[in-house]
Structures are given as C-alpha cells and as structure tokens.
Image (cartoon, rainbow, N blue to C red; front, side, top):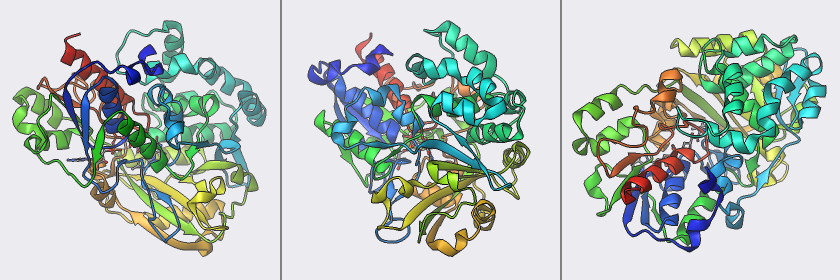
Length: 485
Ligand SMILES: Cc1cc2nc3c(=O)[nH]c(=O)nc-3n(C[C@H](O)[C@H](O)[C@H](O)COP(=O)(O)OP(=O)(O)OC[C@H]3O[C@@H](n4cnc5c(N)ncnc54)[C@H](O)[C@@H]3O)c2cc1C
C-alpha cells in the first residue's frame, strides 16, 4: 500500500493512453485519479446533473438547508489510505469532529457516548471499559497498518500477519458473541448499533467484524463530517482530478459502451446489474452468468429534516455527538435487523440519525438545523417507514415532531432514481456476507472477461462506504495489466 501514500505520479506522469470512467461516485473518481496520476487521459461520464453519487449535498427540503443525499459521516474517508495520500484539503475539504463520535440514548433518559480517546472510553464504559479497550486497542494503535489490510481485496497474504490474525480471532464471530464479553446491557446495546451497520443479522458471522470496524476508526480517526456536506469530498476529488488533466461530464448517462469515446480502458463505477446492461455484448457468457448470481442487500428508507431548532434529546449529552443510534437495547436492535434480513420491515426499526448542523453552521440558516435519518428495510420495500422512524426519534426526543419545518422522504425506489447504483435501495452495492466478501462481485473481483473493461464500484472489494479504495485497487489492477507489469 506504500504507493497510496506518495504523490510520485503527480509530477511525472509517464503512461500514454485514454481511459473512460462510467460514474462519478467516490470510487469512480478515485479510479479516475489513479489513472490520471499515471498519465492517462481520463474522462468521467456521470448520469446525474451533479457528480458524487452517494456523496452529494443538496437543498432537499427548503431553500438554505443543505442535506447529504447519501453519506453523512465519514470514518472511512478520513481514514482512507488513498484519500489520505491526496491533497484534498487544498481543494476545500475540511473535517469537523464532534466531541464524541456517537451517542446511544436509552429509555431511562440517559445516553451512552462512545468517546474518541480510548482512555475516555474506558472511563465512560465503566465495568466494560477494560474489555472494550482489549477488543479494539491493538487496531486503534496500529491504524496505519490495519486500514490498508482491511480495505483491500481478500483473501490476501497480510503484510501484518500477527495484527490480522488477532483481528480475525475476534472479528470472525457474530456481534452477539462479541457483545457477550460485556457485562452491562448498555455496552451490549452500543455494540449492537455499531454492528447493525453491516445490514446482517447480529447472529451472523461477520456482523461482529462490522461492529469492530465501526468502533476502531471511531477511536483511531474519528467519525467526522466534511464542512458543507459530503459534496465537499466529491468537489475536492473533482478539483484534484481536473488539476491532473481529467474531465467530468455530468448529465451523461452511459447505456452502452459504444456511446463512449474510443479509449484503452473502461472503468465502471456501477453494480453488476448495470454492467450487464451496459457491457453485456462485450462480456463472455460464463462471466455474465456469474454477474447474474450477484445478490443485492436490504435497502434503506431515508428522511431528511429541516428543523426549527436542535433536536430536544431527553439525554442532553446527545448534543455532543454528530451520529445517533436509536434502537434501545441489544435485543431490540437485533430483532430489527433480523426482521429485515428475513424480508420484513421491523416494527421498531433501528434508526441511524445524524445532526450535522450542530457542528457545521453552513448547513442551515442561523439557529435552524438539519437532520438525516434512515432505517433498514427489505430490498425494494414500498412500506412507509416514516411513522416508525419518527416514533423512535420521539422515544428519545419527545416533541421532535413539533420542531420539524419540512421533511423529504426517500423510499428505496426514490433513492435508486437519484443514483442507479442504489439497486432496490441497497446503499452498500450488494450483500457483504462471507461469500460476497471473498468473491465480490465474482471471484475475478475488479477484472471482467473483457481485458479492457473493469468494475470499480462498491460492488467490488472492500465494499460500501466512502473510502475510494474499490476505485483505487481497480485502477491499479487496470494499469498493471495495461502495461503488462
Ligand atoms: C442514504 C445513504 C447513506 C449513506 N451513509 C454513509 C455514511 O454515512 N458513510 C459512508 O461512508 N457511506 C455511506 N453511504 C454509502 C456510500 O455513499 C457508498 O458506499 C459510496 O457512495 C459508494 O461509492 P461508489 O462510487 O461505489 O458508488 P456511488 O456513490 O453510488 O456512485 C455511482 C455513480 O455512478 C453513476 N452512474 C450509475 N450508472 C451510470 C450510468 N449508466 N452512466 C453514468 N453514470 C452512472 C451514479 O449516478 C452515481 O453518481 C451511504 C449511502 C446512502 C445512499
């Protein structure tokens, strides 16, 4: 991964050739930058009028209120080995941290806060403080070695075998098993919320790994937001790409490869279903069959709020965190995720909520606020989850509904209409269970049956999240094969 930490290619591009990238999500832009750094002439074609895919910010409710359409909180972007190698701050990207990354309110009117510093976390988690630190400390302290290991294609021979063996020993368990180490129901609830980011049932293998992979960056790099919203990440990537000579064309949906200018390489920031539609005639039958077997995961139902004032949390300490996990106990969160995994909508859904305007005044008019919330639903669900989401918010913040100035609801279908990669509302580009962790989207990972066509979206390793590592690894692979290296 050493190459992701240097700018060596920026000043001395050497390679000649042309590349097209379909889609300008974080992975498409990361791929475009790697190719441009190597000297290729790169053009990105984006279907939507604004670049960014899942990393866009728009006035979704009222004028003057800026909402993140997709990603809001960015541990993996700030901790991304590739993004960290780029001068994105020179292109306006500024990170904002809340005092605590996460708050988890409970029915007794208190909240458990996940503190950023491990020593503070040990103190605030009381009886479980020591066990928490034992679980995450080795990886927090070696984040720079750990992050490249987990954010790359698997299986791979680890560069840090002891660290990774230690991770595997804990992580290849279910969230339920890992939570069993904690004595307090409060700590178990906190871990359930972290593990629920996986979209897996909390008794499934890998759900524990997700819990750890959310907790570790909380201490190592924080869970920050970009000033101005996730669009700032996209704008910085686009700005840097343009500096390298690349171009992004918006409102240019690609329906078939022939619509692209003649080029040597095509990198597709799309999911398998779109790849089949766009590149089908160029792909071999065996490969198409493998793509058809790719499985999408549950979807999300999302709401953006314009608010008259800050959310009236019963536990006032919730105002110290950007991200809130609303779901109560381990058992309740586990039941919510199990329902979704078995194709049902939860009666009491686990709700993820972000309150960015408490820490970034650029998101709303003075004194006003925004909130971003979603819950998991079965793929393609048409169920209206708004009442159930608001029940959960009201449970911990009575009077919430009265401060709502406007709301914008996104069903699975609405999400997909604004980003074709969100198939059935799946925000991770496909299920990330053990099988699709190893073979994502097929055992060939970034390569396809056509030598010049690659897939580089979150449907490739390491999967969902704004980190650009799918695009980075796909483009590196494409360059290696292009040069015959
Ligand atoms: C509601 C929601 C909440 C999320 N929360 C977080 C979070 O807090 N933190 C986090 O890290 N991640 C979060 N994510 C996930 C994150 O946004 C994605 O994992 C990430 O954006 C994936 O990047 P990508 O480049 O693979 O795909 P995308 O970002 O989806 O980009 C794909 C792009 O390709 C374009 N495209 C598709 N088909 C075509 C075509 N035929 N022609 C031209 N262009 C095309 C699309 O318009 C889109 O711009 C969230 C996502 C959503 C939707």
